[in-house]
Length: 456
Image (cartoon, rainbow, N blue to C red; front, side, top):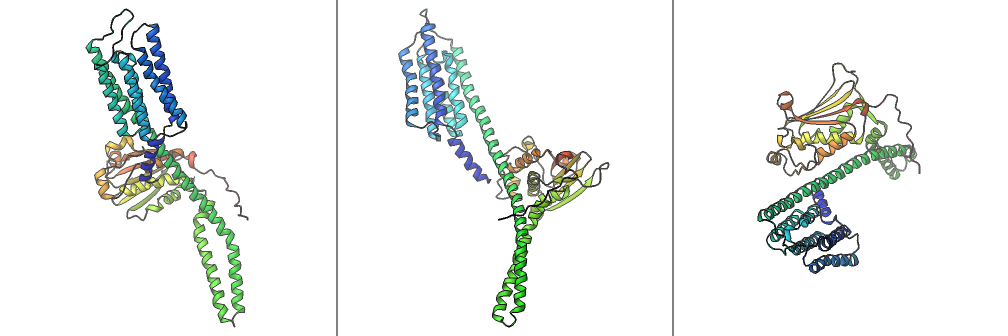
């Protein structure tokens, strides 16, 4: 999935991912709570305020909900401006109700935080910022202007100015903090969902390529017999048509084209046969297969294969799983992208583990991104240098995220470091991928079964 496609997907989801039914249901809960608070304060606690005006204010929300319920289907997805207008109405309605019932002396002023948190979850940054500013404006207005509450004893409820100022400060800080916090968490969840979707697409594409290779191999096998028959018959016809030079040319063409079809199917089926028959391979072969698209990109890719001193010298055979091949390929691509001249790939194993070490001779990871390596949408290692060395590249961190996700799914553990920090030598970034041998090693004696021919 290309970066521009992801940006378009993000905008579409951000604009249309909240249903009208959700906001209407939340508003019904707010209406029930507001009416309960008004009735309890007026009749049970004996607090005097303009109850008629308060009920009319709540009634405005009731009318709005009824209109939305009747006019629009409940599963309607709200556009940006529609959701924003609904939240603006809720802020102003709640502000008016608080104006009637004492302003910031009313403890329910805390509810002004709710519309802001909803806006931070469903709207873009610009719209959320406008609603946050509107909430702060309403809070500031209520701190200065409101209809006071009158207690049962006849006293007017008036708080000291320092308390009102403290409530104002607390609410303003709460609005800003909650908006930023909700926005951050929602954005992280949204980006993670997009990255996981991209991971699933990458794995699905790799699996489809593997399956397609098997189909091509089977097709090449099945077509081999009729092509051989055509070649045999055309050869016999050539011997019988010696005295018909006008037909000899046509029969020769048929024979040559049958040979060409055989060669095409053989070349197409070679990769398919490998995928069909070699479900397991030496670990070096799997690593070289993963690196194959990047060995001819102008950088030297060096392979080193060696067991540890106490390990069995025989190279372990592992399953050629699509997630392992694709994950290693992404790591190697990243190393080649950032390398100056060369990339070293070491394949190491012990009796208990298999480790692949990928090191480039670039400038390594900057300290500022170490805590975020493997997270989606980390844009680059070094913005200025990368743009000069890789013009047109729009890295979003998806490659490392996909590689990390796929390899960890196969049982691997990954670590990222700089060569200078690990062993003090000159070098760039280092990625270590390590598996327990029993997680990916092919067990001795596992058979693949018979290949079943394709029948019409």
